[in-house]
Image (cartoon, rainbow, N blue to C red; front, side, top):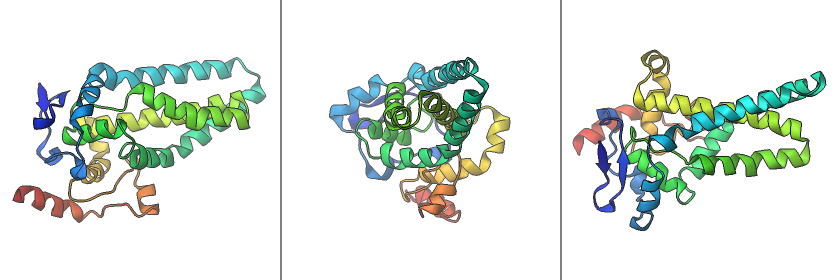
Length: 233
């Protein structure tokens, strides 16, 4: 069905009505998608755009692995080391992207606020935007400083992390598949607090590590406070 953000005229295609615990009474922390940008946000919504990351990045990882398999054994080991380093650094990249890009960068922040308003709608960061960020911030600089082989390895690890983030985030909001949703119960509770309009924090989706390091972790007891506040409205 179609969900509308009232006077903003922002329409998003939703999988189903959000669970009671996922409702957000307005855009996150009072942020509002401007009427002038509503058409841009609506244009970038939908199932095709939502699932594009899974397909595009999955194909890229396969292509990069194919590239590595054509190299010498020595270069393959270097590629693998770079991929492990990229995957290992993903959780920090995820935290920084979520905190400073998804919540502050124009247009992308608008889309993310739309996601906060309708958590189960098919709204996500456009693949072209994430590609530009990954290429400009990571791939090109690593290529310039080290080598193309290392850049391919590192970006493969980062993309694998991005895919895992996308899977976890999807399962948290859509509760599918059920078995994985059960395994991710703790992450779901943590992310539920991130969607609260009453507190700010929990920018890490796959782990709480960096929220604890940078002191943006929302304590568990805040969940009860959040539920009480929502029921009081």
